[in-house]
Image 1 (cartoon, one colour):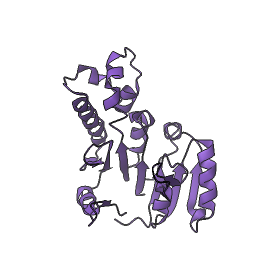
Image 2 (tube, rainbow, N blue to C red):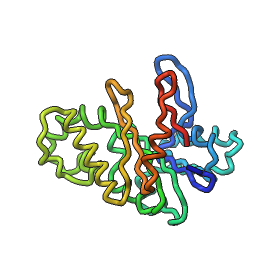
Image 3 (tube, rainbow, N blue to C red):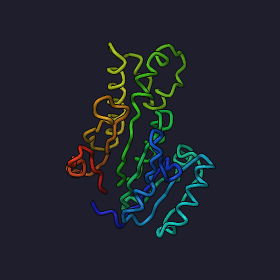
Length: 230
């Protein structure tokens, strides 16, 4: 897929640098992974003022810094204001990488889908975000839980399930199916890590070749790690 004429949108960009707690090893965050590719514009959203400031400082030193726009606001509010709409002839690649489901309400996701040619790379935090919180969701009498916002529906209260993991799978399916109603193709989910997955990573696209491209870029290298290539 050519991205030379496409903007890259990162709705929770972070500080641009990641560090492994166990080893202290540092590696580029999603903004700098994207900057290694030939997008013609980079729109990075980060609502934490301190993280946004650090990101600005790091981006300013990058050769492509002039192509980057940093928005220090909450992405949900930005989306609801209609500020993340693009022309129908523009291909947009959006990366949505939350730490929990409360950060990705369905109504905000649907605002992104109003752009006709947008591909959504989405991390679904099902283990910490859903599976471990099932007891709290079930006990809650409020219709304003994070799960309600995540699915934009309270139909989950009618589900039949035996284990929390089964409930989480149903929630992921409901989330995916709602996006597919907007004309998107649901592609293969990648569980990370494979053995005891904490989250799933997937692509939603309206393009008929999306699944083919997705399977091609999810190649397994000799170390067993998946290589993701734009």
